[in-house]
Length: 308
Image (cartoon, rainbow, N blue to C red; front, side):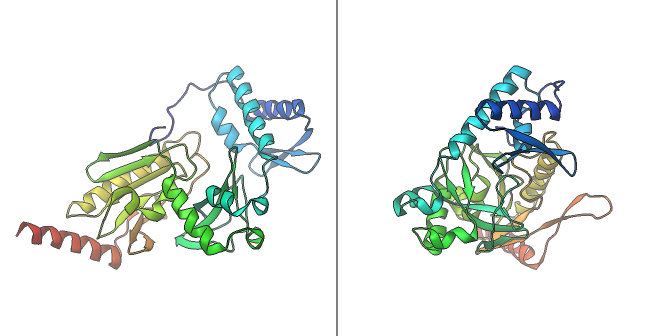
Protein backbone atom coordinates (compact mmCIF):
# COMPACT_ATOMS: atom_id res chain seq x y z
CA UNK A 1 0.00 0.00 0.00
CA UNK A 2 1.66 3.26 -1.13
CA UNK A 3 1.35 6.27 1.16
CA UNK A 4 -0.94 8.00 -1.33
CA UNK A 5 -3.10 4.88 -1.77
CA UNK A 6 -3.26 2.06 -4.27
CA UNK A 7 -2.23 2.79 -7.81
CA UNK A 8 -4.82 3.65 -10.45
CA UNK A 9 -6.36 0.88 -12.48
CA UNK A 10 -7.96 1.14 -15.85
CA UNK A 11 -11.61 2.04 -15.54
CA UNK A 12 -13.99 -0.85 -16.16
CA UNK A 13 -17.47 -0.67 -17.57
CA UNK A 14 -18.98 -1.76 -14.25
CA UNK A 15 -21.47 0.47 -12.47
CA UNK A 16 -22.89 0.62 -8.93
CA UNK A 17 -25.99 -1.43 -9.91
CA UNK A 18 -23.66 -4.24 -11.03
CA UNK A 19 -22.20 -4.36 -7.52
CA UNK A 20 -25.70 -4.46 -6.04
CA UNK A 21 -26.55 -7.43 -8.25
CA UNK A 22 -23.35 -9.23 -7.28
CA UNK A 23 -23.99 -8.56 -3.60
CA UNK A 24 -27.59 -9.71 -3.72
CA UNK A 25 -26.60 -12.87 -5.56
CA UNK A 26 -23.80 -13.66 -3.12
CA UNK A 27 -26.09 -13.21 -0.13
CA UNK A 28 -28.88 -15.25 -1.72
CA UNK A 29 -26.42 -18.09 -2.33
CA UNK A 30 -25.70 -17.96 1.40
CA UNK A 31 -29.37 -18.11 2.36
CA UNK A 32 -29.99 -14.39 2.88
CA UNK A 33 -32.66 -12.71 0.80
CA UNK A 34 -32.38 -8.91 0.59
CA UNK A 35 -34.08 -5.87 -0.88
CA UNK A 36 -32.39 -2.74 -2.22
CA UNK A 37 -32.76 0.63 -0.51
CA UNK A 38 -31.43 3.76 -2.21
CA UNK A 39 -30.21 6.40 0.23
CA UNK A 40 -29.78 10.15 -0.43
CA UNK A 41 -26.96 10.71 -2.88
CA UNK A 42 -27.93 7.55 -4.81
CA UNK A 43 -26.07 5.30 -2.36
CA UNK A 44 -27.55 1.82 -2.29
CA UNK A 45 -27.67 -0.64 0.58
CA UNK A 46 -29.19 -4.07 1.03
CA UNK A 47 -31.63 -4.92 3.81
CA UNK A 48 -32.19 -8.54 4.77
CA UNK A 49 -35.53 -10.06 5.70
CA UNK A 50 -34.19 -10.37 9.26
CA UNK A 51 -33.45 -6.62 9.39
CA UNK A 52 -29.69 -6.85 8.83
CA UNK A 53 -28.28 -3.97 6.82
CA UNK A 54 -25.44 -4.45 4.32
CA UNK A 55 -23.61 -1.27 3.34
CA UNK A 56 -21.74 -1.35 0.05
CA UNK A 57 -19.54 1.76 -0.01
CA UNK A 58 -16.35 0.12 1.28
CA UNK A 59 -16.93 -2.91 -0.92
CA UNK A 60 -17.38 -0.65 -3.95
CA UNK A 61 -14.00 0.95 -3.29
CA UNK A 62 -12.34 -2.47 -3.04
CA UNK A 63 -13.70 -3.84 -6.32
CA UNK A 64 -13.46 -0.63 -8.34
CA UNK A 65 -11.57 -1.17 -11.61
CA UNK A 66 -11.27 -4.93 -11.25
CA UNK A 67 -12.42 -7.29 -14.05
CA UNK A 68 -15.96 -8.66 -13.57
CA UNK A 69 -14.77 -12.17 -12.60
CA UNK A 70 -12.42 -10.75 -9.98
CA UNK A 71 -15.18 -8.51 -8.65
CA UNK A 72 -17.47 -11.51 -8.22
CA UNK A 73 -14.80 -13.40 -6.28
CA UNK A 74 -14.07 -10.39 -4.07
CA UNK A 75 -17.75 -9.90 -3.30
CA UNK A 76 -18.16 -13.59 -2.44
CA UNK A 77 -15.10 -13.48 -0.14
CA UNK A 78 -16.41 -10.31 1.50
CA UNK A 79 -19.74 -11.85 2.46
CA UNK A 80 -18.11 -15.13 3.52
CA UNK A 81 -16.11 -13.14 6.06
CA UNK A 82 -19.15 -11.14 7.11
CA UNK A 83 -21.27 -14.22 7.69
CA UNK A 84 -18.47 -15.84 9.64
CA UNK A 85 -18.33 -12.71 11.77
CA UNK A 86 -21.92 -13.28 12.86
CA UNK A 87 -20.75 -16.37 14.73
CA UNK A 88 -18.22 -14.42 16.80
CA UNK A 89 -19.11 -14.02 20.50
CA UNK A 90 -20.49 -10.69 21.62
CA UNK A 91 -17.98 -8.51 23.54
CA UNK A 92 -19.89 -9.08 26.80
CA UNK A 93 -19.44 -12.85 26.35
CA UNK A 94 -15.64 -12.60 26.21
CA UNK A 95 -13.65 -13.56 29.29
CA UNK A 96 -11.17 -11.12 30.81
CA UNK A 97 -8.09 -12.68 29.18
CA UNK A 98 -9.66 -12.86 25.74
CA UNK A 99 -10.88 -9.28 26.05
CA UNK A 100 -7.38 -8.15 27.02
CA UNK A 101 -6.09 -9.81 23.86
CA UNK A 102 -8.71 -8.33 21.54
CA UNK A 103 -9.31 -4.80 22.83
CA UNK A 104 -7.89 -1.92 20.78
CA UNK A 105 -7.84 1.84 21.22
CA UNK A 106 -8.91 3.66 18.05
CA UNK A 107 -9.16 7.26 16.90
CA UNK A 108 -12.68 7.86 15.61
CA UNK A 109 -14.86 10.70 14.44
CA UNK A 110 -16.58 12.40 17.35
CA UNK A 111 -19.87 11.94 15.48
CA UNK A 112 -19.94 8.25 16.34
CA UNK A 113 -18.06 5.17 15.14
CA UNK A 114 -17.49 4.60 11.44
CA UNK A 115 -19.91 4.67 8.50
CA UNK A 116 -20.07 0.87 8.47
CA UNK A 117 -19.91 0.43 12.26
CA UNK A 118 -21.90 3.18 14.03
CA UNK A 119 -21.72 3.26 17.79
CA UNK A 120 -22.71 5.34 20.81
CA UNK A 121 -19.40 6.96 21.74
CA UNK A 122 -20.64 8.96 24.71
CA UNK A 123 -17.93 7.23 26.78
CA UNK A 124 -15.14 8.20 24.36
CA UNK A 125 -12.28 10.43 25.45
CA UNK A 126 -11.34 13.62 23.56
CA UNK A 127 -8.25 13.49 21.38
CA UNK A 128 -8.21 16.34 18.84
CA UNK A 129 -10.65 18.65 17.06
CA UNK A 130 -13.34 16.41 15.58
CA UNK A 131 -11.72 13.23 16.92
CA UNK A 132 -12.16 11.04 20.00
CA UNK A 133 -10.63 7.88 21.42
CA UNK A 134 -12.96 4.89 21.34
CA UNK A 135 -12.60 1.18 22.02
CA UNK A 136 -12.85 -1.68 19.53
CA UNK A 137 -12.82 -5.45 19.74
CA UNK A 138 -10.57 -6.98 17.08
CA UNK A 139 -12.07 -10.28 15.94
CA UNK A 140 -10.40 -12.53 13.33
CA UNK A 141 -12.93 -11.51 10.67
CA UNK A 142 -14.03 -8.01 11.73
CA UNK A 143 -13.51 -5.08 14.06
CA UNK A 144 -16.44 -4.07 16.26
CA UNK A 145 -16.65 -0.62 17.87
CA UNK A 146 -17.90 -0.73 21.44
CA UNK A 147 -21.00 1.27 22.30
CA UNK A 148 -21.50 2.88 25.67
CA UNK A 149 -24.29 0.44 26.55
CA UNK A 150 -21.88 -2.51 26.28
CA UNK A 151 -19.28 -1.24 28.75
CA UNK A 152 -21.04 -2.16 32.02
CA UNK A 153 -21.44 -5.73 30.76
CA UNK A 154 -17.75 -6.33 30.02
CA UNK A 155 -15.32 -8.38 32.08
CA UNK A 156 -12.93 -5.43 32.48
CA UNK A 157 -13.37 -1.88 33.69
CA UNK A 158 -13.20 1.13 31.39
CA UNK A 159 -9.81 2.42 32.60
CA UNK A 160 -8.21 -0.98 32.13
CA UNK A 161 -9.77 -1.30 28.68
CA UNK A 162 -8.29 2.04 27.61
CA UNK A 163 -4.87 1.21 29.05
CA UNK A 164 -4.63 -2.24 27.47
CA UNK A 165 -6.23 -1.03 24.28
CA UNK A 166 -3.46 1.55 23.95
CA UNK A 167 -0.76 -1.09 24.40
CA UNK A 168 -2.38 -3.37 21.83
CA UNK A 169 -2.72 -0.56 19.30
CA UNK A 170 0.95 0.34 19.83
CA UNK A 171 1.79 -3.28 18.99
CA UNK A 172 -0.29 -3.41 15.78
CA UNK A 173 1.93 -4.27 12.78
CA UNK A 174 2.66 -1.76 10.04
CA UNK A 175 3.71 -2.40 6.45
CA UNK A 176 5.88 0.68 6.06
CA UNK A 177 7.73 3.11 8.33
CA UNK A 178 10.10 5.44 6.53
CA UNK A 179 11.44 9.00 6.25
CA UNK A 180 10.19 10.04 2.81
CA UNK A 181 11.45 13.65 2.93
CA UNK A 182 13.84 15.44 5.31
CA UNK A 183 12.17 15.30 8.70
CA UNK A 184 8.91 13.84 7.35
CA UNK A 185 7.86 10.28 8.14
CA UNK A 186 5.16 7.97 6.85
CA UNK A 187 3.68 5.00 8.70
CA UNK A 188 1.17 2.89 6.76
CA UNK A 189 -0.37 -0.55 6.70
CA UNK A 190 -3.42 -2.73 6.20
CA UNK A 191 -4.26 -2.66 9.91
CA UNK A 192 -7.29 -0.51 10.76
CA UNK A 193 -5.32 0.92 13.69
CA UNK A 194 -2.31 2.47 11.93
CA UNK A 195 -3.60 6.05 12.22
CA UNK A 196 -4.51 5.38 15.86
CA UNK A 197 -0.82 4.99 16.65
CA UNK A 198 -0.81 8.80 16.67
CA UNK A 199 -1.99 8.59 20.28
CA UNK A 200 1.53 7.48 21.25
CA UNK A 201 3.90 9.21 18.82
CA UNK A 202 7.10 8.64 20.89
CA UNK A 203 6.61 4.87 20.40
CA UNK A 204 7.06 5.47 16.67
CA UNK A 205 9.52 8.35 16.40
CA UNK A 206 11.31 8.56 19.73
CA UNK A 207 11.60 11.67 21.87
CA UNK A 208 10.52 14.97 20.35
CA UNK A 209 10.73 17.57 23.14
CA UNK A 210 9.24 20.33 20.97
CA UNK A 211 6.31 18.26 19.80
CA UNK A 212 5.22 16.63 16.54
CA UNK A 213 3.02 17.80 13.71
CA UNK A 214 1.09 14.91 12.18
CA UNK A 215 -1.78 14.03 9.87
CA UNK A 216 -4.16 11.08 9.84
CA UNK A 217 -6.25 11.46 6.68
CA UNK A 218 -7.53 7.89 6.91
CA UNK A 219 -7.23 4.86 9.16
CA UNK A 220 -4.33 3.22 7.29
CA UNK A 221 -1.98 6.22 7.17
CA UNK A 222 -0.01 8.41 9.55
CA UNK A 223 2.23 11.26 8.34
CA UNK A 224 4.42 13.04 10.87
CA UNK A 225 7.07 15.74 11.24
CA UNK A 226 8.73 15.71 14.68
CA UNK A 227 9.94 19.23 15.60
CA UNK A 228 13.59 18.84 16.59
CA UNK A 229 15.42 21.86 15.14
CA UNK A 230 15.08 25.03 13.08
CA UNK A 231 14.18 23.00 9.99
CA UNK A 232 10.94 21.91 11.62
CA UNK A 233 8.76 24.48 9.84
CA UNK A 234 10.07 23.41 6.43
CA UNK A 235 9.24 19.79 7.29
CA UNK A 236 5.74 20.85 8.31
CA UNK A 237 5.26 22.66 4.98
CA UNK A 238 6.35 19.50 3.15
CA UNK A 239 3.95 17.49 5.29
CA UNK A 240 1.11 19.86 4.40
CA UNK A 241 1.75 19.29 0.69
CA UNK A 242 1.72 15.53 1.17
CA UNK A 243 -1.52 15.66 3.14
CA UNK A 244 -3.16 17.75 0.43
CA UNK A 245 -2.03 15.23 -2.18
CA UNK A 246 -3.63 12.38 -0.24
CA UNK A 247 -6.88 14.31 0.18
CA UNK A 248 -7.19 15.26 -3.50
CA UNK A 249 -5.78 12.37 -5.54
CA UNK A 250 -7.74 9.36 -4.29
CA UNK A 251 -10.23 8.80 -7.09
CA UNK A 252 -11.92 5.99 -5.17
CA UNK A 253 -12.11 7.88 -1.91
CA UNK A 254 -10.05 7.43 1.23
CA UNK A 255 -10.00 3.88 2.63
CA UNK A 256 -12.73 3.66 5.25
CA UNK A 257 -13.59 7.31 4.69
CA UNK A 258 -11.83 10.48 5.77
CA UNK A 259 -10.58 10.60 9.35
CA UNK A 260 -9.22 14.16 9.51
CA UNK A 261 -8.20 16.67 6.81
CA UNK A 262 -6.16 18.73 9.30
CA UNK A 263 -2.57 19.04 10.37
CA UNK A 264 -2.44 18.35 14.11
CA UNK A 265 0.19 19.33 16.67
CA UNK A 266 0.93 17.10 19.66
CA UNK A 267 3.02 18.19 22.64
CA UNK A 268 2.90 17.26 26.30
CA UNK A 269 -0.25 15.22 25.84
CA UNK A 270 -2.23 18.02 24.19
CA UNK A 271 -3.31 17.90 20.53
CA UNK A 272 -4.52 20.91 18.55
CA UNK A 273 -5.14 21.78 14.91
CA UNK A 274 -2.47 23.84 13.12
CA UNK A 275 -4.08 24.07 9.69
CA UNK A 276 -7.31 25.22 8.15
CA UNK A 277 -8.92 25.85 4.78
CA UNK A 278 -9.69 29.15 3.09
CA UNK A 279 -13.46 29.56 2.93
CA UNK A 280 -13.40 31.06 -0.57
CA UNK A 281 -10.69 29.07 -2.36
CA UNK A 282 -10.57 25.90 -0.26
CA UNK A 283 -6.77 26.17 -0.10
CA UNK A 284 -5.03 24.68 2.91
CA UNK A 285 -3.12 27.06 5.18
CA UNK A 286 -0.82 26.43 8.14
CA UNK A 287 -2.02 28.19 11.27
CA UNK A 288 0.76 28.99 13.75
CA UNK A 289 -0.92 29.61 17.08
CA UNK A 290 0.88 30.69 20.25
CA UNK A 291 1.55 27.13 21.38
CA UNK A 292 2.98 26.03 18.02
CA UNK A 293 4.98 29.27 17.66
CA UNK A 294 6.56 28.68 21.06
CA UNK A 295 7.63 25.17 20.05
CA UNK A 296 9.23 26.40 16.81
CA UNK A 297 11.09 29.18 18.61
CA UNK A 298 12.33 26.81 21.31
CA UNK A 299 13.55 24.36 18.68
CA UNK A 300 15.45 27.12 16.89
CA UNK A 301 17.04 28.39 20.14
CA UNK A 302 18.02 24.88 21.12
CA UNK A 303 19.90 24.38 17.86
CA UNK A 304 21.71 27.70 18.28
CA UNK A 305 22.71 26.81 21.83
CA UNK A 306 24.09 23.42 20.82
CA UNK A 307 26.18 25.01 18.06
CA UNK A 308 27.54 27.62 20.48
